[in-house]
Length: 228
Image (cartoon, rainbow, N blue to C red; front, side, top):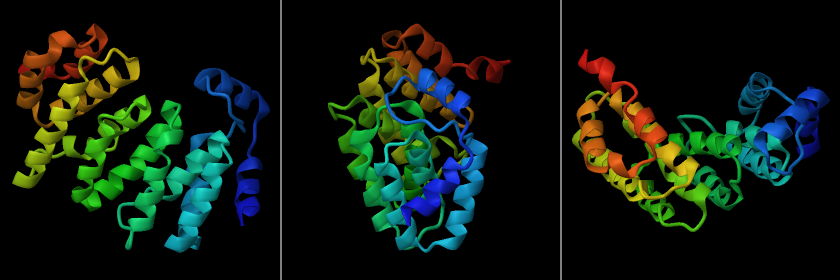
């Protein structure tokens, strides 16, 4: 089963691009040089062909190859709003957390997590445990996977409470000097500022001076234009 799908990815390999990708991502793993739009087309086709159990099984096998594009494809295969039942999908996605070691792989998996969290917000209780992990990429995933709560202009009361809960996680991160953590905090605040600028201003008033300058600037990127 795996070879059939992996061969489809390898059929689009570009050795020159693969070398460039390895230098860019700076993580020692195989790269095939396959562009994202190609992976999008392949995984869209696979989703139409496979039931949930088969998709979970294939994603698991693709991930375990440690090939960059295979890991991206594994995540894309599970990125879908409506999946029922989705317990096996969520469990597989969570099992990948210790393997996160680069932003592209982590972000693709986190995008799949976003769909599962929005489908079942009770899972935020599990995500909260990620915020104190010793693994930086797991801590970062707690914010990237919860980005859907930045998107609503008029959130329901429960979602407003969840927004404040996640902002509390972000507040606990501001003293962390890691660039990727600071970037994740800034990303969450920047996206939220488009829909809830007052909360972002309050956050920056309270914690902005603890953030790295680039993160503080990124977080407030859209606030000035909203005042003009």
